Image (cartoon, rainbow, N blue to C red; front, side, top):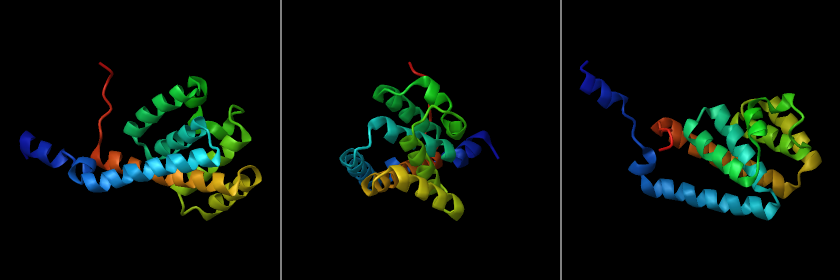
Length: 160
């Protein structure tokens, strides 16, 4: 196979650009979910922690880049973000954040019923029904964006 042919088969379709109506609907959903999260009383730091943890699980470099910057703007610290993948092994996250992170992981990997039950029970102890719903919707939405970016291979380039 020639270099040109290999390049053509390796090139991914940017599904957001190829199907803008569908992508716009996803963006509108995300905006609605952001409102639901705010109405439920979830602060921006917690929402960004959920976005980042789900993006870590899904290995979405593009969303990790976007939401790391958003978390820092929201007031989170590089220390906490640096250990987020190992959040269970630190004392840096509040009980509410821990419950939300576990619920986000269970939403991202729904086939693990035992983890889902454990996460839901922990969430029930510290989050209201509105907060639980909002966390799940945030996780569902970022999962969708992760798939768009991973399957499109959206690039993460150095800052100019």
